[in-house]
Image 1: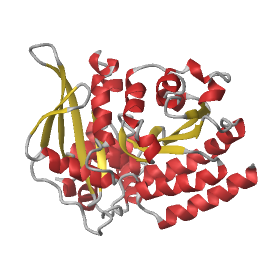
Image 2: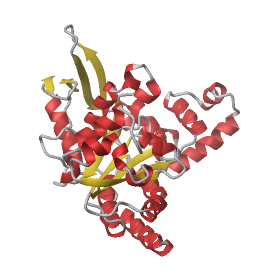
Image 3: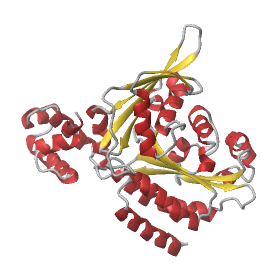
Image 4: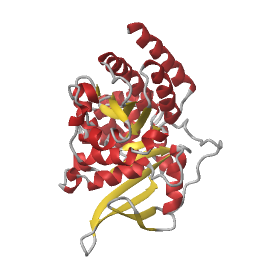
Length: 362
């Protein structure tokens, strides 16, 4: 197995060099994995490390048909191998059959979604880099095929750190600037606002809403009748018990999504209740604000918490003396942190740093 892992690792490195787009990289990873761990369906999702919500998925047709229900089960209820639980596990990968001791029917997800769709097992994995999630991986096998083995799980688990490191570095890359036509996606000038029923049926929308949905569908390369995964994710989160109980850490219904053109889209959902008691969702889609993008960019560059605090003071326009005083450190220490930030972000001055991490998104 070690030789197989080594060969796959080398192929993943070569793929990363050729495919700067996170979406293209995830597709290539699935193409490589299917030869080593055969599967009949797959979903590889990018994740916002701050909220744990989808920024877009690579799926095939068989999984797309059950994707909405899988979203619902993931965010609204308890089950075997939920991504939240896997992210905290010593080995962040597991098969459904093995986790259920050979009795997958223990899982509600298996009984109500996977088995009716013809699947007999699911191998799930969570990709984590620098302590934050950056991807969810799901591989599915038909019921007439043998379930995933412990060796299959070990092989996938061994490759997760490498895939995660690339995805965290490239998730907000400026290189993914164009769609399949070779042109940046045009973005609407006005925010898109729409209202959905609790089953995500569209009830009302302003004129810009459909334009924003087209941008998100173009970024994911999905059809006009498919709800973009990030929209589906924030809505399902807004309806989840954690959001309704006011657990802001677990229930934040917002996500920052990179789209072709080197810009980022902010999506938020809020749960509402009409006068007749019906639950509805208000969704806003717009250019992400610099304040929302800044922490994600800082994470992609690998800035430490102290370095992020220094950047925050610089963005505020504080002088070196003022920034050092507010952080209770000497100016010499602040300069050391700033030099590290310059090195990690590839900048040479405060002005260039502010432009790279903030001003260009205003």
